[in-house]
Image (cartoon, one colour):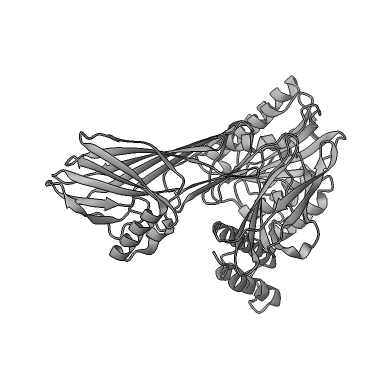
Length: 574
């Protein structure tokens, strides 16, 4: 936040300018007015976005103060309403065009020598004022503005301007978004913030951010849904010449309603080592009960619990019915925790079970720690499990707590085209299981491949290099680099419910650096891929923050990966 003496005087105390989106050049002094809280609620209906902001002004002094604020807003925004709560004075609000807003931004930069405000160059602004802010009191300003979102094919983008430069000591933020579209919503993706998306229906989604919210503008993209087809959209960020980075959002097709669902064979494998005592065990049992409740009678299931040894509910998956369901619940309540963690042995037992034709096989593997019994080498475990998994069972991994071996669990899931899920202490395990369970109906597009139609050299460094299976309501994010400004065409191929399917995705690179988050996202994923390669080589944890057997820095393979991270990724523009 920036505090600036403003022209004019109310007779009761000094007036202050405030730009709540920007970091303070100093902390507010005891005699200064401040914004202590900003509550933002965004509602999107079709292409109309309505943003409501409530700013809480705090006056710690013994005199009345005049408050003024400059709020960056999109250029095409329309001010709908403005009101004051908690005061008896007057309010004013004026929507400034881009040129006048830029002039004021420049004046603030010259006064404070803080270029952070120039992040909003190119935006409009709302100039507001309120008097009085009573001595020792708070006043709430409620601002509502609207904007019409521009559609780019099947994609709509929304941005809430906030500064990248915000630091601790500024106002407390809360953000909520509720998005509804009559066409249906394929996916909602935020490249700027980690969100927990709640899907109310096929046409409405929402999320909320509170507490420690990352700085920077909130950016959201939504793909509207078209029945029976995959929906995709590509964003670009130009760099030097005719080269740049792209981000592709893909929403898979919904499964046809008239095709019967394939029956499932689910084996749930639960860690019963000593570290699982207490809340973790409760979370594991709750997850198991929820999985059983989600299966239909006649589908196959098995339960395994493991420490150094493995104990099975049945020699092989059995049909779910009233009797076996009751027996399974009893089995879950009887086992106790003790001993070490034999991850390799448990996975081997689960994957060695005979397969029943006509059923889709999968494993839900739950653990809270590192392999400590039997085979403990991550590389050997992965290679052994990949070789053993000739039945192509999807391995959905659950990590419980904060001490899990996340690289191993993530790689085991990725290798089998499944997903890894992590449950933190006191987190609602039922919500996590529900997010995974929708995938247990099987992929709507399996073993997908994305290829360039025509010249394959136009695209490079695409991540992930191998796409995961596409499940209903999934969002698939693909990043890469493009070469040349001419239009491109992608071919997305895979196996759907009715056999082989192919979808075409058009991409026209655009000039300009509007989407400067794309290179950063690409670099983050690239570093993760290279770090995994270092881990597989047994990079020295003291040197790279990785675990594994020490490998000499003179190893040319090690040196090549490190050089690629330092010279190729950390210097990524944007």
